[in-house]
Image (cartoon, rainbow, N blue to C red; front, side, top):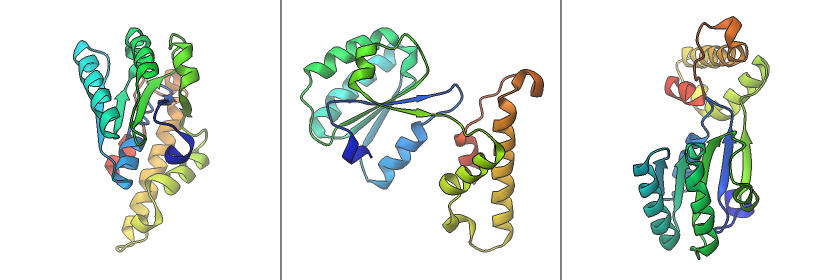
Length: 188
């Protein structure tokens, strides 16, 4: 999708619900495709400077840049939009923006971008299917010893139950926890 459906001049916007971070998927994709990836966490003045330098260097070199949590830098996004219009990047350059839903995101930046929405699956069955399709593939699960498969199922089941209970956090939990695929990845 990244090679076919996106252009160097338009960023790839990855919008998610709070607690669900799609930046791990970009990191994995960069490793699989053997692309150079620079990342910066937004929200502070230091993050803005790092992001500006990374975008300038990557657009000239044709590498990838991942800017995390850009919903924390609404004013900077307006500046980014102006920079994108004035930029002439290499063909392989890609800019990934991860953010939570926010109505204050500049509409022109949304129009310019390729937008993908990430949400956790609804229901235990859908979560189990997604876990075994994406996080716990058969080549990892089907190896010896047999207990590995059982442990992976228990991990996927725990992950599905916790994600489902997070929907009802005032009833199911005393505090809201951020629990995402990154927690499941650590357990595999």
